[in-house]
Image (cartoon, rainbow over all chains, first blue to last red; front, side, top):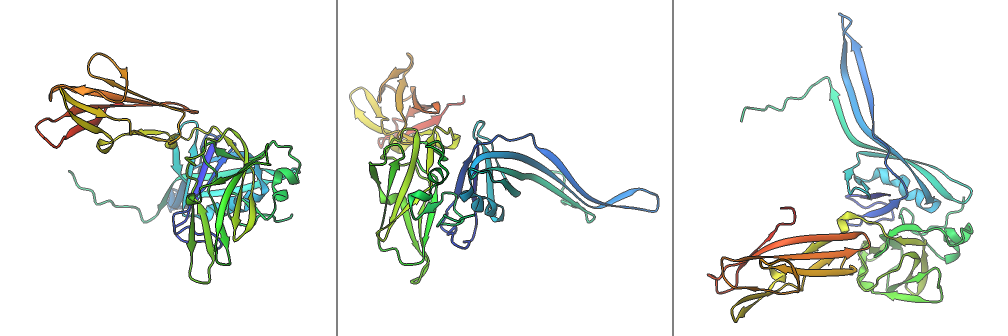
Length: 138
Length: 231
């Protein structure tokens, strides 16, 4: 079983979040093994070597939840627009923050939907500008 | 597709009549509910465009609908956003301490300004959400009683989460092994003792152990309490 909880720092139409409200749903699902997705924009220099002005690596987990009421689908679709999203494996107690959440559903004749979740758990973006932490020996 | 939910955007839908619950609409024959931990309900919020003059809530077991049980309204918080609204009622999913729900299918009836609204059916079940299981005791919950040959500590005021756990066992050890009880004697300042609290819930056993040491140099009754559960 997976627990999804989300909240937002400001109110949304029809939902008062600024007083601390947090939405919670327990999903009949199990995590799949996370996958790594890569987006990149290489350019080739005069020596034929690829130079990456942009690259983004994401750790993504996908899972399917079953028996979700179609009345809940609107709220689940709305979840990705919240600034605080957490997923938790109830079996292990492990919880992680979600960077982005995509929800797609397959409604069924009895109106209990199968819902696919795709959650980005970690993400690193590289640009041509590089990073300098200005670290010193200590 | 028909839209039945009144509180759009909430994961626990409310309807204007119970016939709109999906189990009744789709004839799921008493076999479906939104999963919820057994000791509480799924958090929800209900918005009203008109001022909320009165509200109350109750629950119904789907298998015995003739019985409607009122719930303490203090679990629901009312918020107003100016004189013209909108107005909100919020339940944050807190454990209902007064109830000890059996597993099964339940729904909530929320009455606002005399109008009854019906939640989607929830399937209350054992969900072992680890963050909800804890045993705690602190110095303030230890009651030292000075007199006789030493100091006795009554630690029966231990707090557990969930508060209505099935069983709580209090034990202490002054050097000869753990014995059941809620108090013990410390004869000398240099002596230490251990207290152990075991909470049993539907999700199993949670146990924590503390070491306690009395400081008799302080007539006000200072003592040290150290969590040694993982030592």
